[in-house]
Length: 378
Picture (cartoon, rainbow, N blue to C red):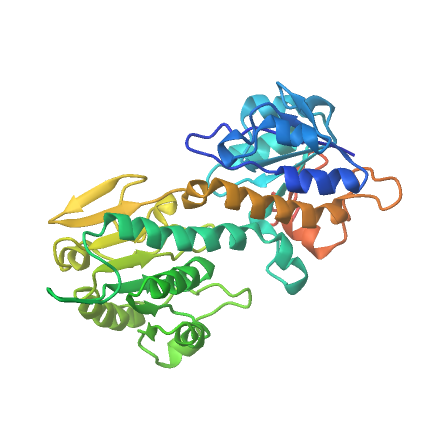
C-alpha cells in the first residue's frame, strides 16, 4: 500500500498526520510512504528526517498515486480532486461542521474514515484521536490560563506576606477536563470541577479536586451508554445554575470543556456569571468552535468584560504540534492493520469490523455513516 501524508492547509494548523517515528514503523510493515514537502516542519519534523527513515518527499504530496491519504484536518476541494477513486482517506473530518466535504468525498468514490467517529471501546483506545488530542488540549488550557492570569497559581509564603492560591473551576470532566484538573493541581491551584455525569465524581476526587453538582435522581441517570452527557431537564438546569452561579463568583479561573457531538455546545457560563467574577479573572472556553460554553467568547480572541478575560480556543492541540502530531500519528498507525490485507499489504478495509463500521463516513460512492447516510440507505 502506498500512503500519502499531506501538508495541512487550514489556518493555524501546525500538526502533521505522520511523524518520522511512525513513518519508519509503517515502512517496516511493508508499505511505502510519500510525504508532501514541508508537511512536518511546523511540528519539528523537517523533510530530512522523513527521508532518513525511507520516505519519499513530493511537492504535491503524491495523493494521485496513493492507496491511502492521511491528514489531520478535512481535505480541500483540490485535495479531494487529486485522490484517485477507490483510495482511502483518513482525517479528523469534522463532518457535522461541513457536510459538503463528506458529500464531496462520497461523490469522488473515496473511502473516507473520520477519526472522531472511532468507537470509544476498549479495543479502539489506541486509535482514539479525540482523546489523544483532548488530553493535550486540557493541559494547554491551564497553561494559557496561567499566562492570562495576572497572579501566581500556588500559595506562596514570603517575608513580604502570603500569596493566596488560585481557585480553578473546571466545567466538563471528560478527557480534556481531567487533564486540566491534574495540571492545575500540579501548578498548586485549589481546584473544583463539575459535570452532569455521576461517574466523574470519583474521578474528580481521585485527582484531589472538589466536585460541585446537584446530586439528585436525574443526576444519577445523566450519562449515555457511550459515556457522553445527556441533555438535562430545565428544572435540573435551574438548580445546577444556582449552585454554579454562587461558585463561579468565587473563582479566579474557569475552564469549560463541554461538547456533545453533532450539537451546539451547551452554555455553561452565562454573561451574568462571567461578570460576577472579580477583575483579573480568566475564562477559557474550549468549546468555542461549536458555539462556545460562554456566549461572550469569540474564536481565538481575548474578550475583556469588566476586567474578566475570556478566551475561546478553536485548536489548542496545534499549540503543542510535536506532541499532538506524535499522538495523532500513533492513532493512525494503530488503525492501519484494520485497513490492510494481512498477506498482500494492499488497502483492504475490514468492512465487518465494528471499528471500521463506526469510523467509515463514505464508501464506494455513498455516505454510509448512520448520521449522514440518506434515510433509505440507513
